[in-house]
Image 1 (cartoon, rainbow, N blue to C red):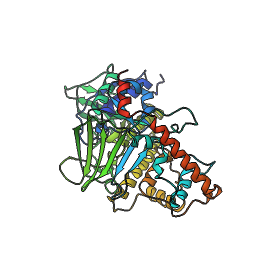
Image 2: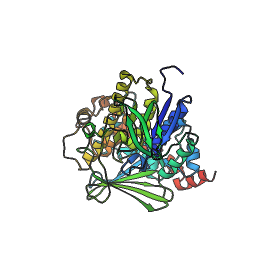
Image 3: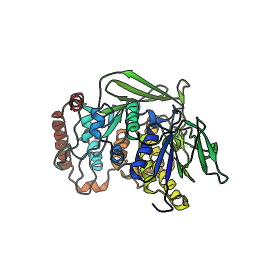
Image 4: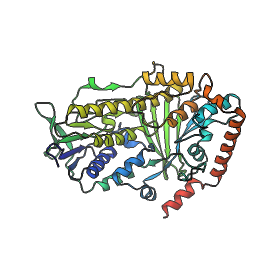
Length: 461
């Protein structure tokens, strides 16, 4: 270990985010002492209570040594193919946001441009019906993507739906050998403003080179300077969050999103219950406020809701947290915490969270929940898509363009004009190929077992 290298890390918070960070740092840096200071759960921390995730969770699990089959067999997770949107926008037919590819390109011509031309001519089914994940999910079926490039059930992505208490317990077991201290009580700062130590409830004092604030929106290690919080109130509606678990056994590979009279609701069907998270402007639930803070300041790095508090649409909160952990390991500075490394981390984190915020704001705008001007990035995205059916590039894009296209088209946004590049493909030939693809997808889906049957078989070993 070099003289400049970080030798110790103190993780404040022992929820899903804190234990994820502890597991990742301990595995990636076996020469570093990683310890955990528990903290009282923050009920407003979306990453701690949400079941949905993005497909990126597989990359994080590979980094910390979690096996998908084990999570499924132990009742910790189920497979997730996307989400069904109901009454979103209002009075529109239900649609499905499925992960991964939709359709097939014709050479360099994107599928969605050919679909748009055929749809305007009344010769195409809804866009989501050309995505394997969406079609499987709508049928209540699941199979792992086929490695055969000729198979219609290849090329799609899937995520995992986690049971938060069981997932946290599994992470707790994974980090069982790491030192644990008494619960958090206070933070001590040096003359330069850097954290000197964390005080614990038993009167103890924990020192480290790097402190990770994984304590949720109340951000226990942050100085009480509200001015540094950037609110997203104008674009992410809902000031009150209610979390309810209701009995149920209808496990489904799709989550469900729907608008309500006072806000909106996200539902995740687990094996024994359904978790419902509802956002509104009422005052009956937990008060929430979405936005972000600069994550890395000196020897303190905020992760998860302590850095970026985002609403429970899709599984973005946990995605941002686990992505931030991997980015921190990639850009880890020395104990001098050089400005260049920290500035680069903050810049890249800001780019990712901005695009995720824009993605969420798109859905709320189409649901009729927003009246404020759109953020600049989303406004440019919508302008480019409306004019030419293409998406402008952005640094920090958290996922492939397939996710944007599935939502833009599912939310009934289509270009004003047909992409002229599609003229190189004969309309009749394109329509025939689309019909053939839809037929192949439907036939392949019929041979996949219903997800409850598959889940029972997997858990039986």
